[in-house]
Each structure stands twice: as C-alpha cells, then as structure tokens.
Length: 74
Image (cartoon, rainbow, N blue to C red; front, side, top):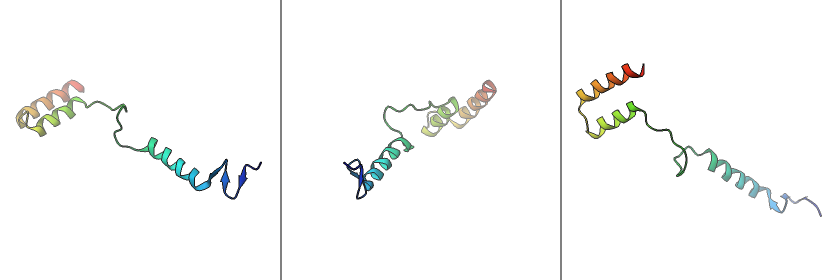
C-alpha cells in the first residue's frame, strides 16, 4: 500500500491538508476576544477614563483623581 499517490497524503488531498492547517492557525492566531480566554483587567487609569467618557464624573474630578493616581503609582 502506497502512502503517497496522486497528491494524496494518508488518504487526504494536499488541498485539504492546507485548508485544515489554515483553519487551525486561524483559531489560535486570531486576536479577537474569545469566550473563556484570559484577558488583562483594566488598570485604574483605564477605569477612570471610562467613567469620564460615560459621564459618571466631571472633568475636574477626573483631573484630580488622575493626578492622585499618578502620584501613588510613581
């Protein structure tokens, strides 16, 4: 029994091997958020920016808290 005959490797056409390889690469190399994947948590400054963007805090409060964070982090 031959292992390689008419562009077939182990009973699969070479094109199918390329398709499966591309699919597996795409699954593991996709930079999108996949459920169950570990994600970095937002830092304090990121949370502060989101609160400003959503309107929870004013510009003045943002500036004072940002200054406070920069002194405590450094």
